[in-house]
Image (cartoon, rainbow over all chains, first blue to last red; front, side, top):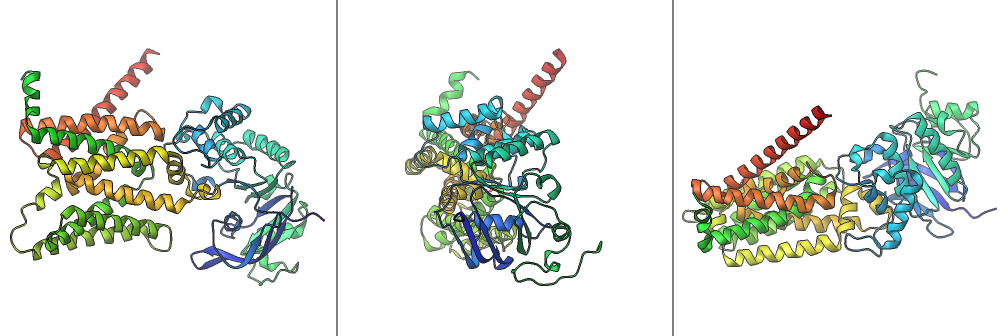
Length: 248
Length: 279
């Protein structure tokens, strides 16, 4: 059995003192591709922010058995201020952090890396374009490049399908499959239909978390997705029983 | 009026000082204002500006240098707002409004309690660039140079933490350190500029040249020098107009900055229209 990359041990986390997620336990193994699904407000984004260390844990712990992995993060597009005066090149460069470069000039190694990334992804012609002038697909591609430029071990994507056309969606899916050969991926989506062929396993998040070690959409999984998760009595995770949705 | 007649005013030391103050304030505001406009925190700037009036009043009452009081109040307000915005459970805009009006109220109370007439009150509200002395200029020049060095050395962390603080955090950048540092820089830059254009008008010198620059570029690093250029041309033109038309200098500077913005906008519009029609 491989050593897990990340272990969430019974964590409780959220904003201010309001716990959005309770009693969440999960082991993330190297080269897994986890689709994180669940209803709006269920805590999908909260979960990945906790993993990224952006939120405090009220209880429980997050362990990195093999040391903290290098992460690449693509936030939800609503979190980005598109009118901020910054160019494609600068956004991608920011993925390399600031170590080793004070002053506005990038060291040649980093500059070369950014140029190579833009050449490979077809963003070169947009290098000096402000992000406010990009299409939805170009914008997501830019932010995906920012997440990938530092060659992460763990890629965390929050709703990367928002505001992109079908063509780019297809392109991105191919890209992610290829990337999964060498990195672990966590993908948050509200749309289970588009992500299920790509992902290897599924985690349903609705206040707490249910992990399905396959990408098969059994009726049970679908039920979990459509209804409050707590209704489904499965797994060792402690749960509460809530009222069903109206369409039940 | 010939050019030499126009420039004869430069023979006076007070006008040379005023020119230097206008140019230095424009350069300082170009850097700090670009940060303010990019982050859309003009309202925070307003809060700092008006809260600092409380410090002016208090220092007046205690017989201290009013700008020292303003610097203390302004910095505390800026740090307080940054702290509040990092917490999320307090309504930031309401908190700013409270500090904004509390500062003004304290200022008025202290000035009222100070025995005798407070003749300089108007100069704090509308600036008194024509009475800027050598010490004022040295302080302004020193702080502008310090800010320039800071922006040069820490350009990338400042940009990254302003644009997407959460992502910056995942890259190990000490986001709150930079945010607090910029809050202090913002407060001190605003307080020093109050000397030039006054509390009521100071925000315009931190925003109008930047908006003008953004007609030409949407690249943070390029906005700063362009904003410096438009700030200098607008404020120097305003200063000359103030002298020759005998109008208040702070108001004249703001008026010229705005006219300049509108003219450039018009030129760009006409240019685009002509290009569109010709092909």
